Amino acid sequence: MKSVLKSMLLLALLFYVAGCSSSTAINDFFGIKMPPNESDYFKIVAYTESSGISYQSSPNMDPNIFAWAGFEGDILRVKLVNNSDAPIELSYDSDQYIIVTKENEEYICIKGDIIKYSNLSPINEQNSIELLLEMPQNYWETVGMKNTQSSNQDYTFDVWKGQNTLVINAEDVKHIKINIGYTTNIILKPVPKIAF
Image (cartoon, rainbow, N blue to C red; front, side, top):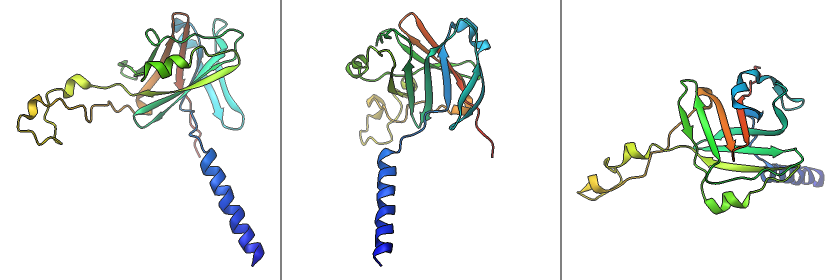
């Protein structure tokens, strides 16, 4: 009886630890620092969680500065890694995180709170940060539309911000462009999934 109770307690503890330490894998997209005009030379060859990622690059690319990204509903989670020997300065005004679809449409993600974003700068040497970016919004398409949640008879003047976030599927994305300041450009491409 004691061994069964002990096993159940151990199992419960393992579930608790797994629940507390579980973090979503950010592995939908991967990219390194590169001149944007050389992005065609960057090809992801293979990826597994055990052996990591393999890719082709050009001599002008810098594999010491790289990023991972993943979609989580209406959030784009980005992990920026700086394994170089110099810090990377972030700028709320000039940094851009752009989703490019297979139809070559571009959508700029929303960085959120300026103070939280600015507090992440600089990304020091041998360090990384994670960002939660909001998906772009088609706000102007919903201004003046009827707010279905409004009881106001004059509903056309009731500005409604609900249901205006664009829905972008990872399968529809060609690549993601990250422009940090005026010197760091990272192009992230889809990571091939393993077929079972």
